[in-house]
Length: 383
Image (cartoon, rainbow, N blue to C red; front, side, top):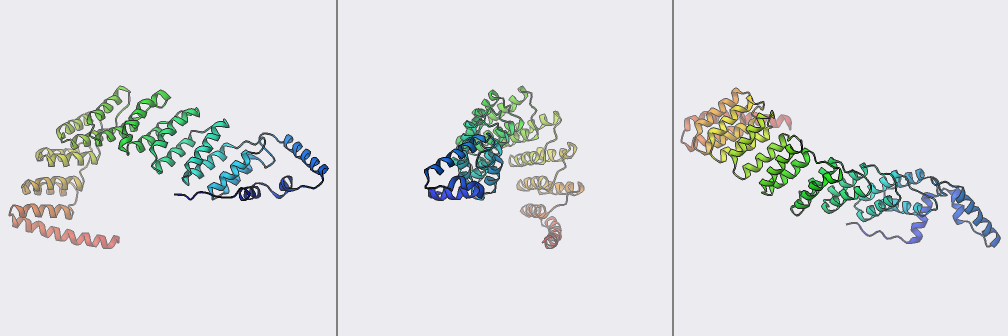
């Protein structure tokens, strides 16, 4: 927590004036005389000076000068004092850059209430706003893990006549769905967005699909998936993978495999994680024949199996007392140019020993030793 910022009004005025006013301007504020006539003359000169200034430049200097002063302050609270002092001067109007710089300084230092005050001032000043400002504000709230404020920012944009962008919507959704009690508000925002000219994209759907799958609401995730086609949006590889992972968590692995077939028929190339998910689930469901067939099809379908895929199936066979089938997988592995690692050999040796096939185990044990020596050498070389 930041300590309360306590400064006397005298200190604030002195520091701020010394920063804003060059010596030639300070006489306008500090010079005085005991003569009433001289005081009256000084007052008239001040009025004439103010009248001659335009809206873009006041007696304290131009908005550009104030902007540079605000930008140069490492203390965000002192930058806010300079901003406030300048705001009180007649005919002075801050530049948009000053607002942006100060908002970022306050937000990044977690002075959120002060940042919101400046944002309110910006709205009152009717200064044209770049939507990028809200990208920064959303990022600040996301990094601070403040879902309520991030959600409010979406609607604040509308008050500034800024149409939210899909990437801004997605950033807010990503934060909201990490908090289980904000899943429903996230869904409401998603459904509400198009009314305000912000059309959710494929990533928006993926964010919510993943959240509902993790929450066990597979039917809602499926509904969102189908909605994409209705809205002329094309799901991507991640969309399919999210659903397959959700189905596998619910032990609906056959439906997940059917979804993979649908994916392939539509011309998508599943990624390695999609295959890992399915192979794991098939092995856990003891559907080893289907797992092996899927492993063999991977290369044909454009995704070369890696060490994780092979080791998953080897482990599946060994767990079910089918160590010789696991040996066949290892042979396929080497012929496909994928070198077994320590995990491969240890799993296979353990499976063979469990079936009392010690001669076979001994053969692979020697390979395991060689692999271990190479692994130690690799670690030594790479540090």
